[in-house]
Image (cartoon, rainbow, N blue to C red; front, side, top):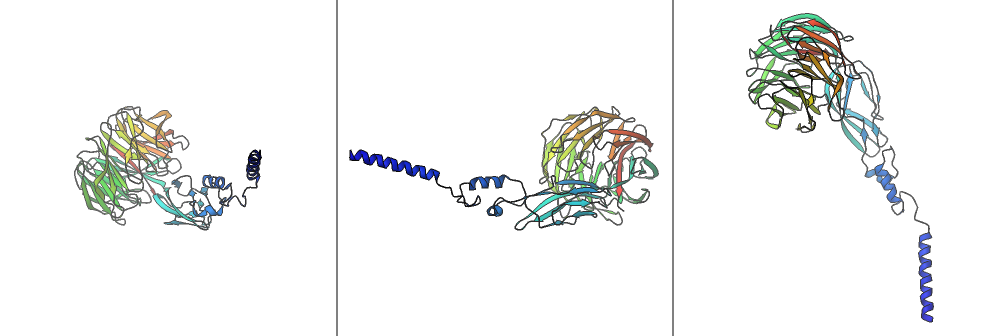
Length: 479
């Protein structure tokens, strides 16, 4: 009986102790106290939060400072005021700075990293490093900024006559005003504009040389600087580096690199590398890190790295990626993350995504159909919203909008706009408001206004050229 009594007492004591522990006040000295029962929830809320204050000071050494403008690529227009662009920051900012200094007229608020102002000059895409500091932390993020030039001039190369026509651009209407003309070499089929907008290079396919011209900043008329060898045979394509005084020429057997004297315009051959023997287009990413070369015979695009100091091409390919049959013309998206490829005879556009750090390309979308079979030029607007393809056989231009996240092409409705006979070359003005095309069969250039909301082209007349206009190029100028 005594043992039963002891067992009952032990049971009651155990129950009482259990109830006491369950009902005892919890250790809630603070939600930030590691001994607190709610500390785990506090930690979860802190690391999952995106507000601008810490729930607990103890976490300040673990969570990094965050700064986000919502994009890593900003496009502005010269002499157009931008609204205040304030980035998200995970903590109050105590100081902010940029390296290099932002474009003239753009202000960086040192207290919160907000951008504002009016860009006073045009500028090719340039990477800026924005550094923000809070009380205890620091972060540096890249931000690419492009300031679009005010349109000034247009130039047309005529393969039939070997002449180069000059035109002025009305910055409000886009209408072209006829200027002078000069003689280039035989079969001018490609042109390139120097980064400082002062010199025009014409690649003459039939005479294996380059015609170098200076541009009159008042009326756009051209003056010959020199005529030199292209560094190979059948120069078919030309492109300038966006920030270095370097020119790249696609000859049939090599890629030649020339240095440019920015004062005189003189060119000097400084490097060549062998390439697959054929004739197709080339394109460069907006920051000048990679060069892409279409191979007409091998049905591939070859990718080359560009030395950040010398600007020379690496002799070793980054990649050789397969394409469809007879790739001819290619263009990069304004942000450098997508490449679009048109074929010599084919009704499709191929889209390739680009790793901006390595230059490596990948193809994840099916080809986008166009309405023509024989293609002309393909162009992308400088803002990065629209892509256009000339269709020689159907006398139309196909119109597309680009997906802002992945670069995918989406046909506009209607998908085409009519041109004169055999549209071949195309160019968009530096501000992204107007498109021009050459009509190779009838000796004219078409003028179109780009609807900035949806990309639809509206015709605005034609202007005469010389014989067989193949290429058109536009230029801007700084004050």
